[in-house]
Image 1: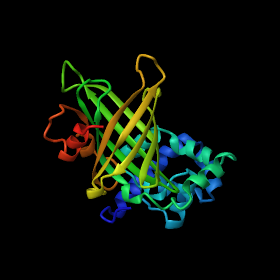
Image 2: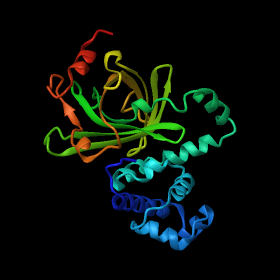
Image 3: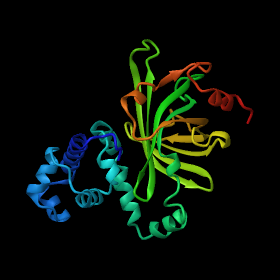
Length: 271
């Protein structure tokens, strides 16, 4: 949780996000009974005027299968995260008898790794929709308890009117740091018909600033054939996606000067 966010703002965010979760989960009375928090006290948290104690923050976050930090996210960004609904999916996987030994093997000595990659990125790739254009999307890696997860947003302007947005896609998924690489799996959450896979490596001379790799995807319709393309991610800062990050999401010409030199070089390199 950022130290530059004051307590009233924290209480407001927590309360707003808690209300959103309760609307999806059932009656407040049942939630209070399961968490074992007094209903009157819980109502104060819902109002956004009172900040729960550290212990109650943990109890509430654990009940909903989230990290405490996520509970303090900007409400708009929190709703974007929850639209993917993959918090609940990972909890189901975590409790699966067959999945438990697999995850224990995969994540051994890795549960605390990968935090150096957490934060917001500009994500660049060749567009599969607008041929010859480079798509810049807003990408975020964040920690949710034992796991790293991510989400990113793509926007495509209209070919007839560049001021109008024609398509918006939102992806949610999981990130696994393994052997000095990042492996990703995600799902498109708007049309719900696409799955993508990626593998990325830090640039050695600037491991904090850039991740370079490839991604491949497949949709459920034959009108969109499977694809694979280079991807470069430029680190922009810590936290979750903010309005200024989303304002950069668009399609660009290949020689656009706003594209970092390292990204241009990577895209122009011979495979």
